[in-house]
Length: 79
Image (tube, rainbow, N blue to C red):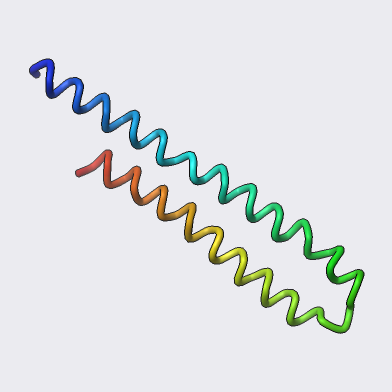
């Protein structure tokens, strides 16, 4: 294995590690979404179903960002 191939392989691994940092933000985002749900229920119990639908939508969008970062790391590693 030549030196340039080793450098390219190292760059792939470092890039994949950096791209997985989006999972940290996704975890924090999901925590914020579902952490703010009980106080919202307590303030206005009549909107329980609507608030839950918004929370599920927020969860899905937040997880999509994390999964895009994970997909990018897999593309870097296995392509």
